[in-house]
Image (cartoon, rainbow, N blue to C red; front, top):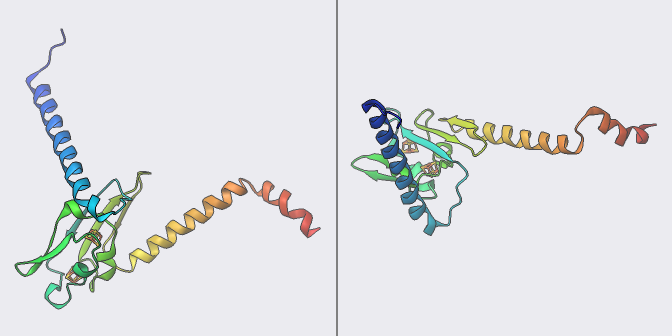
Length: 156
Ligand code: SF4
Ligand code: SF4
C-alpha cells in the first residue's frame, strides 16, 4: 500500500475544499444569472474598484450601466456582487475616471484580457475584430500562392 504523508493528506484535503468551493461558486453564479438570460463569454475573471480614484457620489454611472446589477451603492461607496459580474466591461467604459475599475478576464481560448481605462475597450474590440478578419482571410487564402492563383489571371 502506498504511504501517504501527513503533508500530502492535508494538501489533498485543501485541494478538495478548493474544488468544492469553486463548484459551489459556479452553481450559485449559474442560479443568479439564469433568470437574467445572460450568456457568459469568459471562463473566469475578477473585478475590483479603487476607492481612492472613484468619484461615486458624483456619478454612479457604473451602477446604471451594469446589465446584471452586480454593482450597487451602499454606505457611500460602490459595492460589487462578484457572483453576478460577467466581466463585460460596461462599467469601465462608463466610468468617468481612468484606473478606477480593474477587470481581468479569461476567454475559453485561454487568452487573458486586462483593462481599467474606458479608452482600452475600443482598442480591445479593434484588435479582436482585426484578428477575426485575419483568420477569415487565412481560411480562404492560406498562402500568398493561393491568393495569386485566384487573382493573378484577372490582372494579366
Ligand atoms: S463610474 Fe467610476 S467613478 Fe463613477 S461611481 Fe462608478 S467606479 Fe466610481
Ligand atoms: S463588468 Fe459588466 S457585469 Fe461586471 S460589474 Fe461591470 S458592468 Fe457589471
